[in-house]
Length: 60
Image (cartoon, rainbow, N blue to C red; front, side):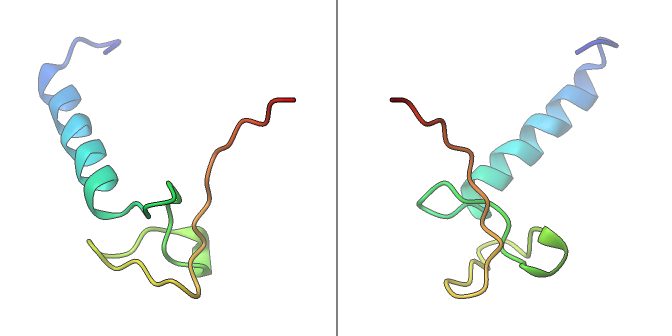
């Protein structure tokens, strides 16, 4: 965005779309590898040993 590089922006948007569609749990958690707190391969979302961090805003 800052440099006006449309190709770079398109690549980042494709990566974002793939991450949301293929590497995110239904709960919104992301990061399927507990070791190194990282993403795994597409659609590999283990239920028992995921890092699976979420961002949640608490309101009172």
